[in-house]
Structure formats: structure tokens, C-alpha cells
Image 1 (cartoon, one colour):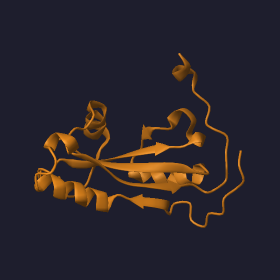
Image 2 (spheres, one colour):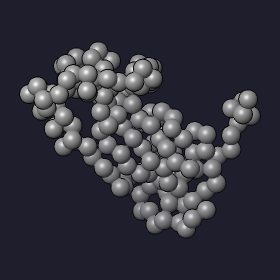
Image 3 (cartoon, one colour):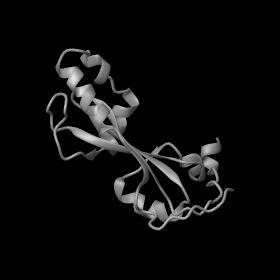
Length: 143
């Protein structure tokens, strides 16, 4: 395990990468005809399924088709999460996780279930900075 990282507020995102400018440029290319719909509206079937069952309302229409079915899907990754790395979590779970783990990455993706638009909105890091051992793999996942 590594050295502790000084973190004043575990719940406050750090190392934030916001992809808003890339998103705006992609939409501009889409609407000006510089790109095919299929280049941006090609969500993986697993992402669409995740959006249907675990997506949280984005509170705005889809930027590509204006449908109200836009949701966000939040994935968490990190060595400390063990077998739970790469899983979907609700936004409301993140503050508790920030106190339970030293460091993990969060990826927020927007997905339209109507036109299949999908875009990585932002990534950031949460955690209290105290390194921990990875969670063990439950027996039912070993089979």
C-alpha cells in the first residue's frame, strides 16, 4: 500500500477532467454535417442496458435528438474496490464511499435511450486518501 494522501474533504471531487468542450465540439460537428449520427449515437448494448436499469435522470433533454430520455450512468474504478471496480453506482452512494476508500475514480457518462447518444461528461477522484487493501472477492464471484 502507498503513502497516505492529504485530503481535506473526501467527498469533494479532485483531479476533475470535464469534457464539456469536447462535447460541445462533437455536437457542433454533428449538427453541421461533419460527422455521421452513427459516430456519436452508437452506445454499446451493455451501456444502453445499464442506462435503462441504473441510469439517473439527467434533468435535461438529449443534446442530439431532444428526447427527454437522457440519463447519466456513474462508474467507479479503483484498486481498493477489488472485484467491485468497474461497477455502476448511484450518485447518492459516492459520499459514503469517499469515506470508506482511500482513492477511487468516478466516470460519469450521459446516455440517451432513444437515439443512443453517449458521451463521457467528466471524470474525477474521491476518497479520504488513506490507502487500504483491496476488497476480497466473494466466494460466489469465484465460481
